[in-house]
Length: 260
Image (tube, rainbow, N blue to C red):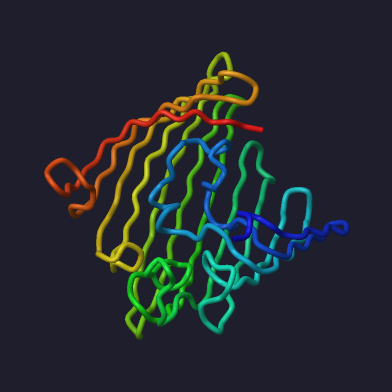
């Protein structure tokens, strides 16, 4: 298996070119736990967006506050393409307003296939039913830092898919707030809603909601503890519990994280 990221980068002046396997440009949340506001990932991250790609990215710094990047990739969470068509997208970033960063991201391509992978799902997008699916996704991300100790963020995703001529939609949003506390501690909150109206991402039409609180406590220069409380909800029974399957779930997590 390849490493999570393995790519070559070339930056002549205002241009940049990346070739290889790299993290997705979609989403406010990412794969590195050490730099995320919360320890767990949102439903928006899990179901609504890709995580990595294999391909090429070309960027240009239009001005000190405006940049653009274009992508051509094999697919959604794939190194080897599961069908004969490539996917692509774009990122437009703007930081020209004081303390505010804005991003507009797109993704489009034919995903999945008629043949299941070793995990029993179809293509890197992880669809439960066979058949190639055309995906068109748009995303808006805003990050606002009113002070050096407060960060507020909003991530909104809307996507359409089509399998066998039958269209479907999924969408969601997540709001974030992070506060730096004395002695290097941080308190972070996340509230979200993910709507899989046609069951394209989860297999069954459903809506998910979640509220998460995370407290980070540094122990040393390379280690910190993360305490997290999370409450999940679903419009249908979707979480295992003592009675079988329920529509709500509460979790409490302690993690010891190393940072290098």
